[in-house]
Image (tube, rainbow, N blue to C red; front, side, top):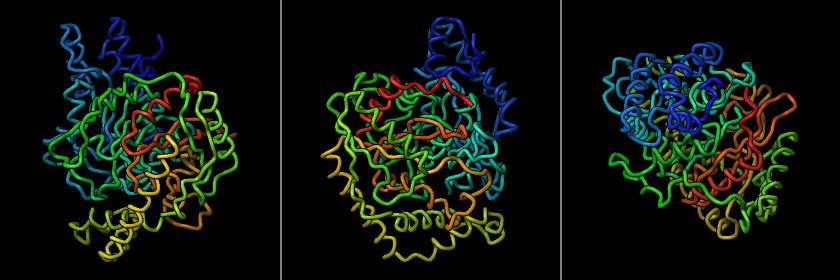
Length: 464
């Protein structure tokens, strides 16, 4: 049998059901993979083998007794180090948080996984307070891409993406406030979806407000559906949480996309895209016609890049994150984070509300656009993964991460579901991603389209 660490969650569950593999063996395989690969990647900031194996033994015992807690019972999952996790510190990549805790509460998604008997493989790295689109921080250093360890895996869920790509747990929980699951998924050749805001409850409330979503990160669409089903649904601590979907995501959808109206925008009307990536994404978008969809090239008409308005919202949120810190603690922050916090603290209420008004206008534009088109396809990223340890590629005219992520943050502003589909590789062997965007609440349609593409063009066979 192949190394259990290379199995998807769906495959693990089939092995458990057949009695050919136990959750303990799966956990041991994942821990062995972490021990072997993580010194090169630095994807995990916390590994607690004793707790992981205790959870796996309990899952194995439940399976022997026919008393499983849920569909994910016994499946390893990693948790981004911004989610509260009972018994483990949540340090958010910062030296300013006291590891002593107390750590006596789970975030909603973590609580749902614990209730279902999932096995926690550890906590994954994030930039400090998840502030940027790459993953390095003052606490744990630089996280690297499994496809090329000189490159970044992206961020802010970079540790989660690297862990999934390298087989260090088939499932991962990430967050996305401006692209933070889609950026690293595109850079590491993994699947993810940022679901409609509120689909997965979030607590504590993000200082970045309603830009911040929780999302599953996996190697396949089917695994993401399992994880979505496990963690979506209301939680009393999140006043904006949506009710559970009428039909489980794991039920899937049709094999073809006949009749689906699909728009392909190669640049959203304003972005510059590397020609190699543009060609690969265009070919992937065209392939949707072979699945039965009607594909037209069309821009939604956003009226230019909303980066300035996004930065007002994002930088003000960052300033809120650190408002309680002493001058001595602020001096220990990531210098880039400190810079945007200083900028964010200067915005007036009128400037913030002006940015919010632009956000609402983007929502209106996309709402009308989706009356004509069911889905929008774009590149996920305009570039391939670049040097690790940098916020921007060498030679960038801008010092900020927002300068190279033009396709992701607009859909945080509009709260729409947006997925990354692996769709090819550069000549250097680096992954390329196609972004699939749906109307608000059309999460199931996005997942159905992604699953149909995956069935026709499976990517899992190529691993780092």
